[in-house]
Length: 526
Image (cartoon, rainbow, N blue to C red):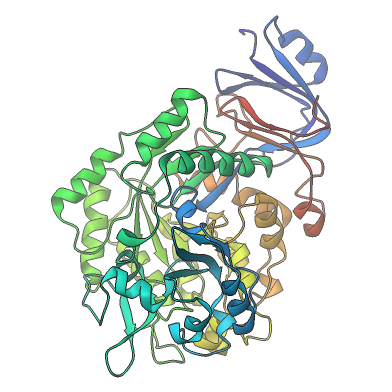
C-alpha cells in the first residue's frame, strides 16, 4: 500500500469492541490498515507522521448527535445565567450584567429559578435601569424580555402564528415579556445586537476547537444557523480546515410550500471538505417546561395538548415529500403524543428510503419503545438534560408532567433493550458540549431519570460512534475503526467502556483526529 500520512501506535484499539490491534494507518482521510506496532514500522514512509499514544484507548471518533454550534453562538451571547438558582440570584446577576450596544443579554436561565412563579418582566424591571433586556431560558424555546425591549420590537399584544408559538399576555392583553417558541422569539431578532461577521467566525472556530479537545470529531448540527452559514463554513475552509466534521439539517416550519420543500432537496447538494447539508429538521412540539410539549394528556397546568404544527397531517405530508426525494428527516419530539405521531408518520412511508430519526424523546410510553427498531427510526437523546431535573420530582419539568410521566423520563436503556439504535448528544448550548460528560451521564443519569435507565459503558460509546453513524445513514463509512472508513479517531487515557463513569467524565484526551488530520493533541501523545 502507499505510505500513510499518519500512523498511530502503542494503542488499545476499540471498534467499539477491543480488536487486539495496537496500530492504525491513515491516508487521504481514510483508515487504510490495522495491525501491530511491529507491522506499523513497515507501513511508514518518509512523509509519515507517527504518534505514540502511550497505551491510550483508541475509539472511533466521537460524534455529538445533536448540537447547535452555529446558531448556538447567538444563544450563548451575553451574561451566563446557568448558575442562577433563584430569583434573588437572577436579580443580582442582572444588576452587574455588562451591556452590549446598550442591551442586557443573558442565556442559560433555568425555569426553576422562578420558584414556580409565572415568568414575568415585572420580576426584573427595577434592576435594569431602563435598559432593554433579552434573557434566553436554557431550553432554547423561550425568552424573557423587558418592557423597553418589547417596545423596541413593536410587541404590544397577542398575535396569531402559523406554528404553536405565543406572546404571553396578562388578562388585560399586555405582554408579560415571556415569549414562547420560535415565531414569538423571532420578533426580537431585528432589534437585538448582531454578532459581527469576524467575531462570529472567530468564535465558531474557537468553539469547534474546544469541542475537539473533549474528543469530538463530528457533530450532527440540528439547524442551518442562518442562510449565510454555508458561505461562512466555506470561507473558513478557504483558510484551513474545520476542527470538526459538521452535518447540518435546516429547519422546516409549518406553512412550508411544495416549492420550499424542493429547495430543501436541492440544498442537500451543498458541501465542503468537512461539512455538508444532510437531512431536514422538523419540530413536532416544544418543551415540557414551557408548556409546549405535545402530550397525550394535558400537563398539570392544563397545557400541552397542541402540536407545534397546527395541522399534524401537514407535517406528515412534508416528511413524505422529502422521503420520496431521498432526504432523511430529524423530528424534535419530546412529549408522548409527538413521539407517537412522528413514528406513525414514518410507518406510513412504507419500507426502504432514507433514514429518519426522532430527537429528545423525553417521555415515551411502553407501547412505543419497540416501534423504533421495527421502523428503523433512530432515537437521538441527550443525557446531560437530566441535570435540569431533580430526583424528588420537585423541578418544573417533573411538576408539569406529574409522577407517572416523570417516572418514565429519558428511557435510554429501555430503548436500547427494545432494539433501538440510540444516538447520544449534548444539544449544546442547552448543555455543555463535553463529549465525556455525555458518556458519563448516559451511564449515570441525574435528576428525574431513574438509575435503571443508565447504559453500559459499551452502549454509551456506541451512542456516540456506531449508533450516531446509523442515525445519519452513514454506518458504511463512519463510526468504526476499519479499513476504508473515515479516519475520525479519539484516544483516551482511560478505557471509556470499563472505567467508572465519573472517571470517564474527567478522562484526559490524548489525541483527536478528524478526516485524517490531528485536531487536538494532549501532552502524552508524541
